[in-house]
Length: 77
Image (cartoon, rainbow, N blue to C red):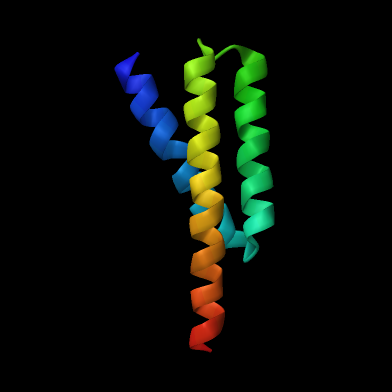
């Protein structure tokens, strides 16, 4: 349970950042990560609501950070 909680807090965040860097759009990165999370929920990989809430928190923080990262990148240019 502890390992799943740690992964729920880190993996969606990192996936949003990865997909944002690849697609150059933080909305696409968030949508792709949300789609992966929904697919994993439908397959039954999330045991409890607690894990789903942690996934959502990580996804939200990843979106905010990716938006800031993109804004900083545009500001540098």
